[in-house]
Image (tube, rainbow, N blue to C red; front, side):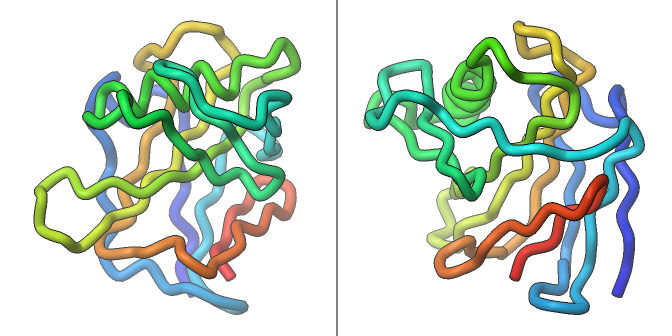
Length: 146
């Protein structure tokens, strides 16, 4: 398995790092956060609103129908994480077909601990990776998809 190390400032505010061929499952590839441990901040709300996603206990974001562009989803994920207990390393995942190819890609969003979305937040695209049926697993600074 490969370990992909990411750090704050690695990605630009509305762009992402692109990982192709990310290996899933036990013994699969890992994303390593150089800033410390990863965590999931589950939303207290059970229904997404425009500009604020619901983050599940597994770290999967769900969106309001109005959040239908990539930038709107990034804003909604950031707002969904901002519960007052967020810290650097709070992570959420979501799917989006940015190329309208009917092949969803998954995105990993790692919060920098500052309320507003900015250039220190990390966005990683996992090309042609469908989150359906997968469970994000955190082990300290490592994220795998099992």
